[in-house]
Amino acid sequence: MSSINTVVSFIKQQYKTDDFIPLHVPHFAGNEKKYLLETIDSTFVSSVGAYVNQFEVMMQAITDTQKAVAVVNGTAAIQVALRLVGVESGDEVLTQALTFVATANAIAYQNATPVFLDVDIDTMGLSPKAVVSFLEEFGDLREDACYNKKTGKKIGACLPMHTFGFPVHLEELMTICNIWKIPVVEDAAESLGSEYKGKPTGSFGKVGSFSFNGNKIVTSGGGGAIVSNDLKLGEKAKYLTTTAKIPHPYEYVHDEMGYNFRMPNLNAALACAQLEQLDSFLVNKRQLAKEYESFFATKGIKFRTETPETKANYWLMCVELEDKFERDLFLETTNANNVMTRPIWQLMYRLPMYANCQKDLQINAEFLEERIVNIPSSVR
Ligand SMILES: *Cc1c(COP(=O)(O)O)cnc(C)c1O
Image (cartoon, rainbow, N blue to C red; front, top):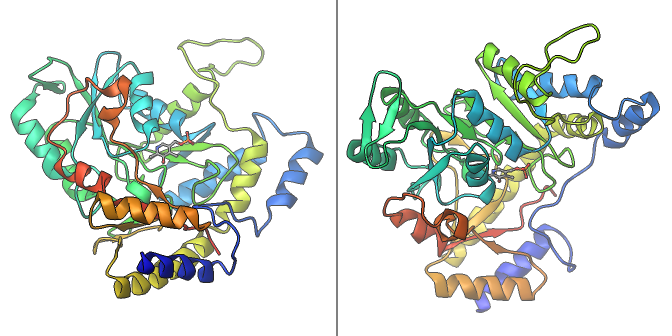
């Protein structure tokens, strides 16, 4: 109890306030107002405009990919990414149960079914070992794709999520999925700026997806991005998210069911101003993570850090408590004292709409579910 009180005062010192400290709030210290006013003055606030293009170019550079496409939100980005790699109605998608609900929802929007596999303790993201075990038991590798022996359904994709910005074991996961002919889509919504062996997350899979929601490391108000190193897929992403229109001087020609998922120029303006500050946000957060790490070490509380081969963006920082009892005490004490903390998500198969999905034993996911707590992580 007293040790949690010192946690409360340490966090208040970090943010130099006695007022309520939220988990994560946006930081506007750059050209946000300037760019937003420019869009209004130009009248280009909506679906076309220079900032949309600039945002896409900036995202290509940041994620080291051939093509980035701006979309309305991160959930839409995942949904379209799954369609791009060929996920069809009735397919299955391998993913983790320890994730934000949008990961599973995006699969369902594509009329596919999630299969929930365990995470690794060190990354808190989809475990390559769990994927191998599942495929050795249920995988039926055919000429065209991999099928699930139990259900007879095609495994259309594997969708790992980089929890709180900590990259999953990408090399191992990519190797397995290549052997089993399963395309990888990265849910990199939380990991903009994170790296695995020096390469940005989102650039490993066939397609990657990002979110620019208000609680993410940088925000466009609401928004998302689809990235790919396959130019054809990238162009298809643009086409599908802009109503699948065939270019024509005046006729409306649409030859597929597309979406109106484009990011408005107004939001792209905000995103560009924010992306300009990404590097400084990353440095700022890493500094806070260092301070948390040395502080929590003296308290006997485990502060979660990046794995050796990765660089995390430290989007949402977290501690791992001894057990559920200690976790609840930590949550109650901090929240009662104006310091916002939150437990990690409930596992997806506990939600009514995903209760009947196939899953493995989930030993690590259930361990983390009872122990991980997010602590204030905003840029200071
Ligand atoms: C935020 C988030 C999303 C969805 O992003 P939105 O822009 O809010 O739709 C998807 N997956 C994960 C893991 C997220 O954290």
